[in-house]
Amino acid sequence: MKLWSVRRHGVENVPRAGPVILAPNHAGFIDAPLLMGTCPRPVHTLAKKELFKGPVGWVLRGVGQIPLDREEPGRDLLEAGLGVLEDNRILVVFPEGTRGAGDFSEMRTGLAWFALRSGAPVVPIIFGGTGARGRTLAGLPRLRQRLDVVFGAPVTLPTGGPRTRSALEAATEQLREALVSNRAAAYSMLHDPEADLRSSRRHDDGPEPCA
Image (cartoon, rainbow, N blue to C red; front, top):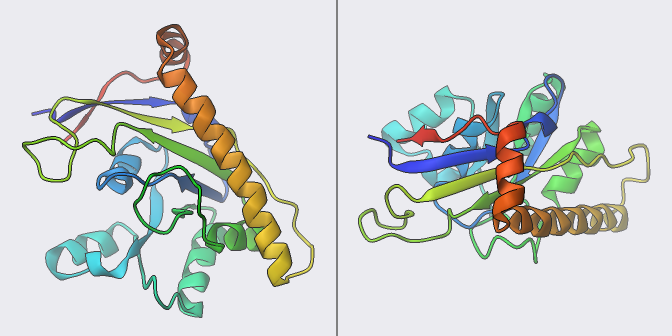
């Protein structure tokens, strides 16, 4: 049974090869699995370590997900993330660090760190509808609700600059401004039926099951 009607937009913005960093907003419980199911390439996500318990943890590790201690993100975690990019794969970094309003009002510096160290393009991801709450499934959108995943245009930071705290914070602010702009453009498109139809005709593979 199809639980939600999922539509993706702008998938052509994800490079077909090479290292890529996906930077999604985070307002819903299903954001990470939804991205795994809609991205045209396999992804590796930095996920909170609390999820890696029991059988669920085996599954997450089996599909290449990386446990994250949000209180003490050590050097091993950073090296694991860089390793994903050095292998020309896709790394998912939630810039806000946790679920919230999903508006990028506050961001941690991890996204900029990976972008500066790797030189990989950052593709903004905007979710529509995942923060809504239904009555049937606790904490999840209502059944058969439409959910949107918008892949924005890549942003690339210049590399080779000083590796200082101030440079990292400046890069974080640069990325935050780009993500906020992408979020506004995505929501404007999603709330404009004609623009949404044009986007669907060009880029959308149609509704996808998410069960």
